[in-house]
Amino acid sequence: MTFSFRSFALATTLVASLTGAAAAEDVTIRYLGGSGNLSAHELAAELGYFEGTGITLENVGNATGGPESLIALAGGSVDLGSAATAAVLNSIAAGNDFVAAYPSNGITEQAQSIFYVLEDSPIKEIKDIVGKTIAVNTLGAHLEYAVREALHQAGLPPDSANLIVVPGPQLEQVLRSGQVDIAAFGYWQTTFEGAARENGGIRKVFGDTEVLGEIAGGFVTLRRDWVEAHPEAARIFVEQSARALDYAREFPEETKVVLRDALNARGENGELAQYFQGYGVREGGLAVERDIQFWIDVLEREGKVAAGVLSPDEILFVSNEAVASN
Image (tube, rainbow, N blue to C red; front, side, top):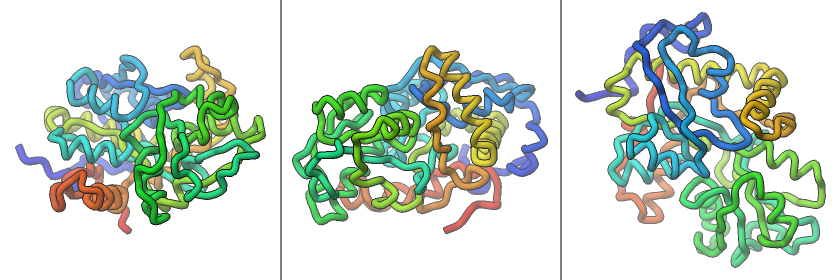
């Protein structure tokens, strides 16, 4: 059937969802997690927001980056993915019928990706990164596209820096040991970034907010056929995840406690939770068209996507009619 996400009818709105969610059919949503953080749907589960809804989340492993989760989503081994907006759009353009369910994170002055060098590095500004080696968590995702856009805006070839893959927990180590010139801590890695900053001896070159402005950094993504098969579960999943995003913004210290306990339970370092900077997402977890259109324009400019193939209206899952606007 044809599914119009912008006109998707709901029995309740996000505001009404604060009083609880109606039960859907029993659905298990499989996903890949990440180190050092909790996604909003994981936070929602920790807060008990899915209790009585019929929805169960099942973590089936960790992803090194967003593209890996999108590959798993396309292959059917998970039911949701989470990746940078540009990676989601590339995947859709390649033929995957995905829907951007809700913004996983937003880029703001508080929560942003930061590119660090050692204090005595000669690298001072964006033009200095040409030919330098930058550690990122994965290729083909947000940090790579942020670097490309930064270079483009500086009038430089977008592929003139060298990116290598380094897991988040090792970013500080490879920078301090001189194995890379720059370590890029993603907006979703504020726990690792905060610990590295507190240890001193490093300096910010630039952040992605300076390049991209305030914008959604990525999206939790569902397959369109899954949404069509489970419309009520999809609605509740998005609403309760958005509710968790609002909780994190309104109660940051309490959220750090939840994150600390979750990291400890997973055998990770719960002390990193003190550096959590929030999700940076707008109230209600809503996206605006620029969150998608900005990257469509970039991909079209670089020749990666033909003009007119992608449209925000066909990609965004909007959970009520009170859509935030530009």
